[in-house]
Length: 179
Image (tube, rainbow, N blue to C red; front, side):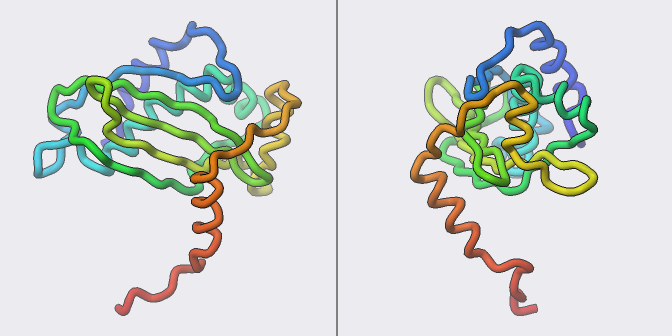
């Protein structure tokens, strides 16, 4: 089940937090609960992605993004993700999550999210986000302008550019899997 209560707690907790610069980091702290676990008694990989929402949604509010989306009738969607898992998170472990926008191109915003336990990174997610309207994807420049920014995107790190290039080579629709 989606953690609506935890999301509401995060939203309320950060409702008066100061606005962030467009590439500023939102930092939040979370606890790994028993219902977040997989059969190996560690944070479930799918649940990790869901918990990253608990950082992204307050980040969007602090950037002013949620107000812009509501005012224009736009939505926001994850259009791609790559996650690297490196350290186990066990029941009742406390984690710190860091979420930030690292740049954009002609179609997407790119977010970097990490989870940390005792000063060690446990996982990192690179997400490609799209603002959407009834006509389809909203160009990020329109979104950035609506936020009141006129600066160009920061240069995306090489590893992000490589991921974008690699993903562009993936066939769509997917080829058969032998079934």
